[in-house]
Image 1 (tube, protein in one colour):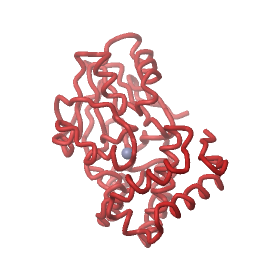
Image 2 (cartoon, protein in one colour):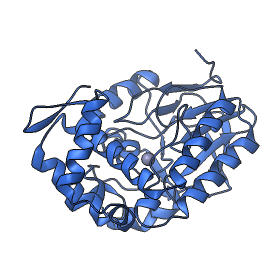
Image 3 (cartoon, rainbow, N blue to C red):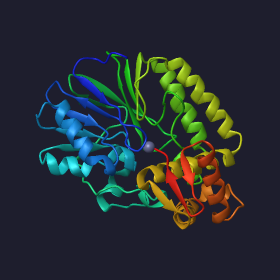
Image 4 (cartoon, rainbow, N blue to C red):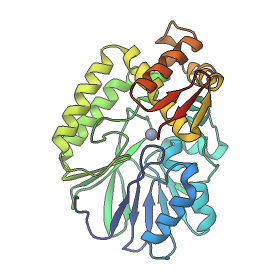
Length: 305
Ligand SMILES: [Zn+2]
């Protein structure tokens, strides 16, 4: 069990919902990232418990993927005075609720509509609890994502840029921007320079073995960058596994539709494969059942989680 600075709590949530980092001291009670919409009742209860029944004043998002911003709308309804601060890049997309730019439509994921009050300033700071946090760019997984760095405590909130055992899918690469591999490499470089004592990832437990995590992430990135098809295959498996966690049960045609109507709309994804969606669906189903994530009864895919 790693020790967190006073006034902070990490609500570790799993893969469908991102972790929530709650700040319980200082001028404003804040939360960084709010989980997926299916887990909203649990998110509300956990945050209420962490705050001891006090109101939440501030929501901050590292990025707006459905598993990081899916509780925003419900928290805004629960705490009408709450201020919501997002990274600057998707301001217009949120205003217009452009669900393609926000990634929800191409991934088949859902996120209840929320509003924002202001945006973070990249390379600026944000006050969370009793600490100042530097807002750092974290391109790679998402071009608009940020990480939050508290130098005095040596703590990095790394979002999906670095997990204990990898990092998130490089969505810009699926969209055809192969510069995402180099961008992710730069983000890892930045983390190495910061040399955090403790990393709070977007998913999984906080960890202190940062050098080892960086090594794991780098070797995975190099392997993926050698052949974009590897990355597209990993993304297909990851996104199907996420959708299955969300729905628990997917008829064969839904698996094909996720690929055909969602993922294939992304030029980088489409370019990586010669196979038609039904063949890709079969490949992905075989992969998930082989590793025990899912069961296949010949008609539908069933989650094992
Ligand atoms: Zn993400």
